[in-house]
Length: 86
Image (cartoon, rainbow, N blue to C red):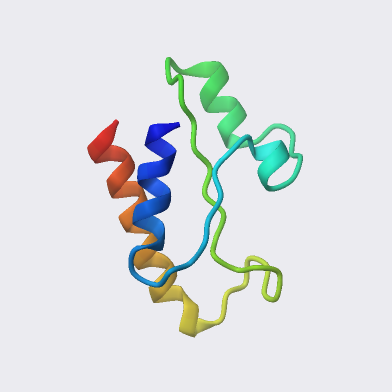
């Protein structure tokens, strides 16, 4: 979607980190009973976004301290772009 393209552009702006957009099950991995499922089923939201941190497999969800601030900066840029263009 155009909105996800805006977010992807903002996410990569500061550090060039590559993110992908798409259906969670086909883009990242299959999950059930996620927060995204709940929001989609229980609110009037038509678009639901889930963000995965920048790690590419070395650290999982335990990013080293050196990656925390860059992750926050690029994530804030992406979320801000979503809100500004929604």
